[in-house]
Image 1 (cartoon, rainbow, N blue to C red):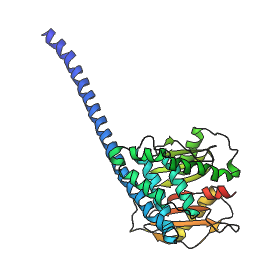
Image 2 (image 1 turned 180 degrees about the horizontal axis):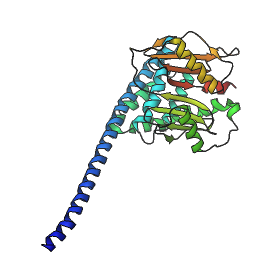
Image 3 (image 1 turned 30 degrees about the vertical axis):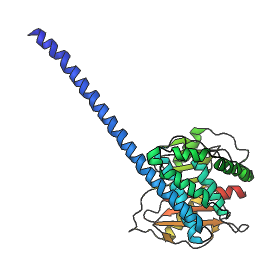
Image 4 (image 1 turned 90 degrees about the vertical axis):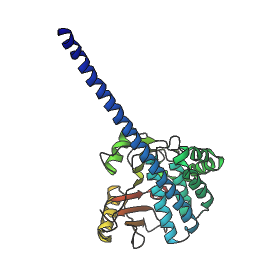
Length: 297
């Protein structure tokens, strides 16, 4: 009897431990499958956004085409952060460069089409075609010219390295405190930190203080609308918070696809210097871009 009790005392804890290990493995496998499924969906969303960029690139001479291209580019950067494509971090810089060239009226439809084609297979090849495109001479030349073109960021040229911790603090303060962020490679000038998460993308100057680009991507409830006045008030408060003074709205904004888009400039420029997009359903910030503002200072 004593021997049987001893066996039970040994077997039961071992069985409990085995069940716990099995449960943990099953849970990890479930989480892994869920993460993989989410990444696949993000790849599909990325392909859709890249396709919209390619379609809009032939219409950038029109107001609607320029807006469609900017929205698609912002969405592509947000989806990139969710797609978990290793070795494709310089795609952020490529999208930024395409946006810069679109704003100056340059021909970008060929590269946009190549980008759309490369990401269309990312769900299957894990980003292999995209990595080949990013390593191609055409894209390398574009990113090299980006650094030359961006050399006029005079007010940012001498910024020191504030460290990734400082950059992350700014990113969380600007977006949300509990978002999961990962540091990514940045090939642009001025030297910057690029952080991305599940559905957020943010680029900051190398001192970790100033926000160059931000995009928070999510589905929109088209049945709700806070109104243009409330959206404009938030856009102006973002400008004030980022100390982008003496800017005014270039033209009246209208709500499209549940998003208000405001373009800002100042008296000395005819082009947009800052772009802010506000979700119509919640009145929260969707996108912020101050790249042209800092380039012109």
